Length: 98
Image (cartoon, rainbow, N blue to C red):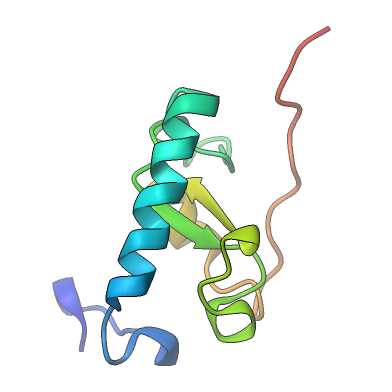
């Protein structure tokens, strides 16, 4: 059993590593500068707006801590999306308006 009574995926069974925490903080820092800290998934009806965690777009077990496959997201969107090796990411949305 993980925190809050939920189960933890096999990839996180032994917890976060120092290397992962450094990559996570860098992704959140860059997202704050480039996207005002907003969630990059922004799932309608789910998103809380501000990114506070990272999502492994191809699955942590597939890509590890490669920052090219990680994006800043809110916890609600990350939990809704789940493991992309099991369920596909939701469709993207336009980041700009013309």
